[in-house]
Length: 92
Image 1 (cartoon, helix red, strand yellow):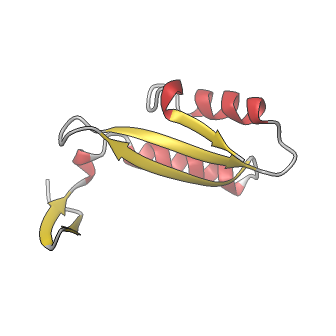
Image 2 (tube, rainbow, N blue to C red):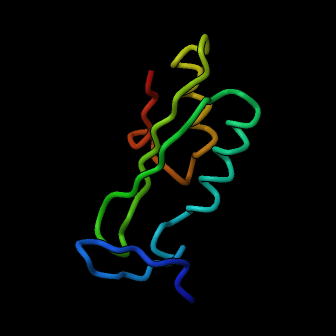
């Protein structure tokens, strides 16, 4: 697979590819649609683990007035099979 970009860490250039970030496209696509339709105002996806064993951690900011438990349940269902419930945080 061809690299999708270059990341510079501590002055060193590293190539990265979508294969390094499991389910990246699906996660972003689902979150973007949810943001477009107004359930969330913003989100952050970070990756933890070692190269080849990375897993996503998702932080979501719900729209004002939307109960956190509603956002948590919806995002958990939305990302089921892509991100574990333990790795989803609803921020205020």
